[in-house]
Image 1 (cartoon, rainbow, N blue to C red):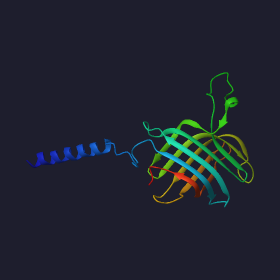
Image 2 (cartoon, one colour):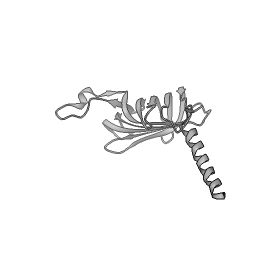
Image 3 (cartoon, rainbow, N blue to C red):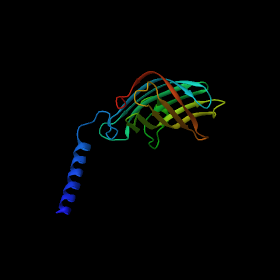
Image 4 (cartoon, rainbow, N blue to C red):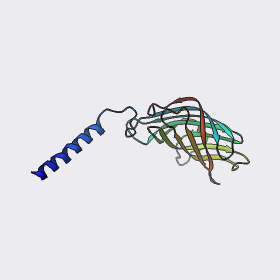
Length: 182
């Protein structure tokens, strides 16, 4: 009888967990895809003290966790960075002919609760004292906000062929909308 009661309890807990995790309790759930982040403001880099203006908008696909679209632009002393889109890399074409800043689709976007992580293709124009580079790059962007905090922290890593350019610091938000983070 005790084995039956234990088995019944295990099945009941499993069933309850399955119902809760698969139910439509979608708002502010870190387990479900579909978050949106809209953030404009200034980033004060902790290592240099320089201030960079930026705009970031990211949407995670509501049906596929970890993928989505985004827009990112950052500018400041001796550095300009943007996400980029263009035509495919097909044989016989010039993919840089249609290359444009802003609006990359089908890139890595994960928005869970008060955290957002994005990876996208981009473009950078960087001068001294940063790494001197002008061309395409990979961008890793991470945003974290404590619930109820008005601003948060932003980290941007720009991977160039020479070496990464890293920015990290507190955000002074002019506009922030992140519905998964109350």
